[in-house]
Length: 279
Image (cartoon, rainbow, N blue to C red; front, side):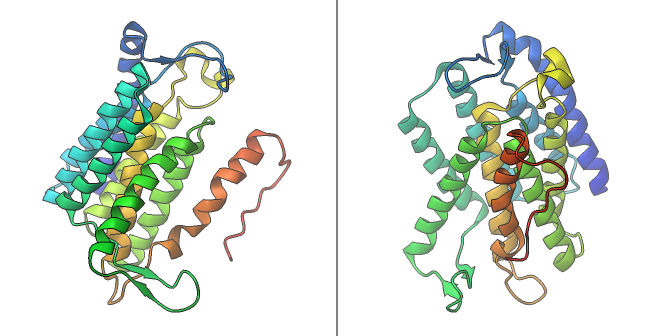
């Protein structure tokens, strides 16, 4: 099926899921209340993560053929969303969450074969290649770090979502340049990006959406972290046009996105914002 069609399906399912899940979230007390560092107004439903997951599953389900790797990605994502929802509702122990994240990383490697062997030339001193058990250990730590990085990033309206969307766009561009828009990775970039867009319609300041506002919660941030890092590994470790192109070369500008959005939110930027991507 056409990539634009499956992306549209992911967007619409996410959009409808948010609308359908909002009343349920209030009924079961799956809401984020203001207090302490949380300065939003009123109780905000934490349904964005589950809605994006449903959009991702719906879009992937309409692909012409889903590989075992994609099936494993969906399965691991389901685990992360489930533990994230439990944490959103009951505030689980951080050690319990970390243990689940580590197991999810191991399961993702076992089910998809996503391993990082080639790091490119990040230090300007030659190619860095991993060998032996270090490959698995490094990849487990990388996946776990990415999951938790997005979780910590989710502290301002649109921040985690826009960062993930930028990553999906960058990875899709990289795949398109070297694969000619072929492969399931490109389709997943489009579906996941569309699902994020469906959620972001409700993740803006209250003056724009009123009581329709919602958050992604831990379920959404950990989901996005897992999908972004998996796509990054798959894209960077698969030979593109005869050679490996480390994904850091394509998504390094992402490091400036959170700070740029923070500056906008804090009112520190007036006028045109320029992000330097030449470094």
